[in-house]
Length: 472
Image (tube, rainbow, N blue to C red; front, side, top):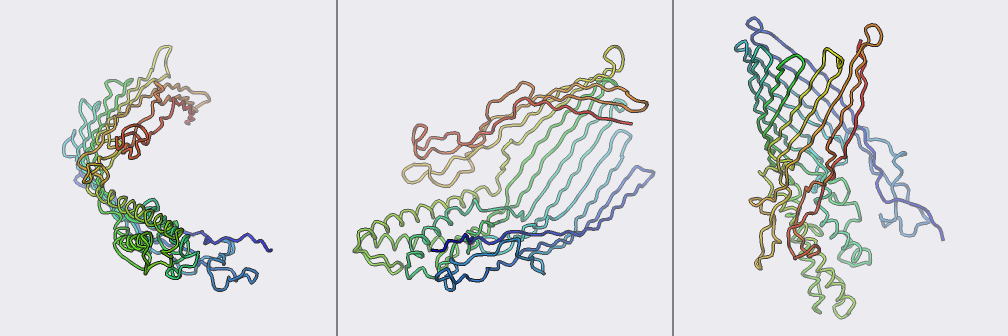
């Protein structure tokens, strides 16, 4: 007997190149009261993949010439890149802005930028086998800045809106049910030789089970920012900032939706449910036109019953995953909540025995975010339908406190040394933060379908950061 280690997995490696040129322009008008800026950047990108070449068929492996599952891929180290790029893209990023000093104490600001993000993974394809697209984004920001109390108080407020379209992301987690169904059909019917599944492709041959499934997401984030800096004296500095942010999810998983709704010989929701229906015929003692199982055989009937139940369960789970995601379209998905507030206070000692020393403290606060949604009930009242975005589950707000102490002094000629110690999470709060809740469908923690916590986020314990800085 001959043993040889072979791998059916395709070799994976890629190369990404980027050629860029950029130009910028700045001008002052009306004696410096108006400042304008502009920028332009061009990127030419290319991603090079490899051809999935198989090694020569080994004659000592029986049936290798006819069965692709008995062949193997060459190691990636021996597989060259393709001469032509798998994905190539050209894009322009533009930036424009202006500052108008309307009054000695008032300035108005405006900026706008647009860019694109090329796909760097040449092997990414969506569920329909199409390559991942390039992503595009745009940001618009405008506001006002005030300088008051002789420059000791600075206040700025701004309104921003950022959009991201066609963001290509890994979507493997969205096709788990699909992969489970294909694996069951291969293991229980193709491999044993069922005549109806001869054409079913082997593992990794459909886009949905390659491990490189992608899809696109779009977002629009909009909100306000407020910043206040107050220096009551040269020894004190106070800075506060707050923001209101809504990050709304736009169109996403469009390719997955089209894939599930498109029925082929072995794929698609209707196809899988049709298989389950045919298997139920066998389980009931009837001959099926889609399977070779013998309804007179008790073992075959049991297999048909189990496989019908499994396929229906996985199809339902796959459809619900997709419907849950689609239900979030137009919904704010920020886990940290809509509002945020930060503060910093520092005191510098410039005379006396504490000269050269500085102390300070800071805090962060984040509002309560969404940690899940209630589900729509079925006919019996059980919450097993898709998520109901009108009934979100709220988490708790989040606090963080820190402190700082530093000392600066001259050590050699014009060389200054600054030693600084920052303490993060000063109170050492370590209670886990709940970030996701869902229904306990099996009643593991108590009553069936009770809403229970399912995911916690551990907080980093008190952390000390020591830095030294030399200036000369």
